[in-house]
Amino acid sequence: MRIEQLEYIAAVTRLGSLRRAAEALHVSQPALSETVRNLERELGVDILDRRRSGAKISAAGRELLPHIIGVLDAVDTLRRAADDQHHTSRMIRLGTVNAATVPLLVPTIRAFRAAHPETQVEVIGAQQADIQRELLEGGLDLGLINYLQGDDKPTGLHTTELLRGRPVVCVRSDSPLAARRTVSVADLLAQPLIVMRSGYVMHRYVHRLLEGRSPTFSYSTDGAEMGKLMVAEGLGATVLPDFSVRGDPLERSGLITYRPLEADNTTVLLVIQRPLSASVPTAAGALHAMFLKSAETYARDAAAPDTPGGT
Image (cartoon, rainbow, N blue to C red; front, side, top):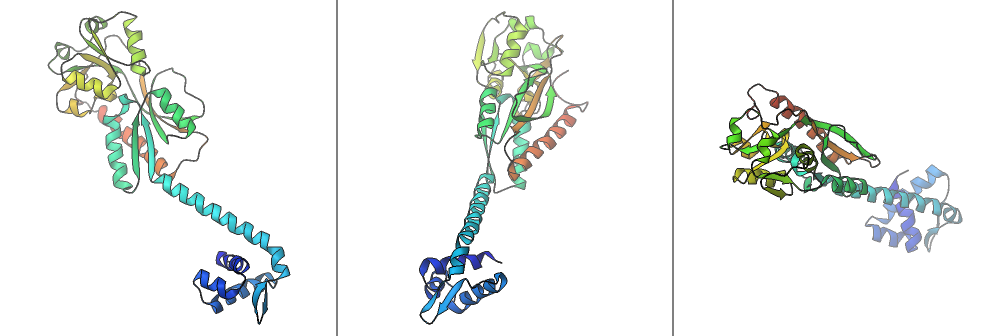
């Protein structure tokens, strides 16, 4: 049994004759008639009542017609679902907190683009809570999120760790702080500090680190990328995860560097999240796997003894 056999019968029923059905389907009348006869022989039922005046659906055919229509409707639903999935697989929506962007995201997107040239990736910078809400509501396929070790993870999301690092002080390369092995809280308080806006993990970390004390002057910015640019322009220092600074174009060019915080053992995690309840589109699954591979490469390179920055 083939789908076109059922489609031919539905067309004959709808149009009232083999001739009109053949014209509508752009097949010859003998070919259409033979296709229907093959199905009749398979089922052992005369579906069409053939007379000199033409062919119409038989009484037995009318009894089978609801089942035929049901199969055709199911096939149409399947085709639409496949078309929808094909369409959505051409666009992946990735949410990212800004402290997770350039050093890991850009190489991964570049590799994904080479492997999947027809699939677009829309990168959306947002705060953690917004990304997780959009993941749960279906507005995003994947999300890059930062956590402090020990933070609770939300239910409803599958979480995979990509990187773990430590908070560091990001400074301009000619800053006096760049000459030190470590930077103390007193050092931070003595100069302008660029802090992340409320809602970011590093805002919460810096607030806890300073214990309510205020630096001589502070700026508030919406994300690490702007923070690093402000550091490069000599406006002050900022505190970020080391994986947000190491490998950044500004760090590779020598404009900025980073130093560990004195007597601080805090761990910052970068994870990738996706909804637990939804099926993962093939392309999104491929991008997820590429992030894992890129994170392994990044962590291996960071552990090399000649890694710049740090100590």
